[in-house]
Image (cartoon, rainbow, N blue to C red):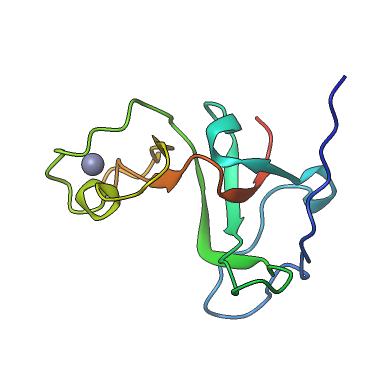
Length: 116
Ligand SMILES: [Zn+2]
């Protein structure tokens, strides 16, 4: 079994009008690479790179379920093209929202998820 520990700080789930209430048990949350996100995993937060400092969790305003699919840099959705110049592989985590079906991430980016 391979266990990898990531040097990140996960802050408490935000509880304010800007963030939807969490419908899942936060104790089940895991940090994985974007490339490891599976269909149905609930995506909670990213870890923006703060130039060498330990990254902190950045919660999205609403959690969403990943629907991974092949990344297409020529996709016309408006999100995919912004990652076309990424130097490392890109994965498309997808999304279960009808208005946003693409969610491109650098494959090695850290994601806070609740596994499906
Ligand atoms: Zn797209």
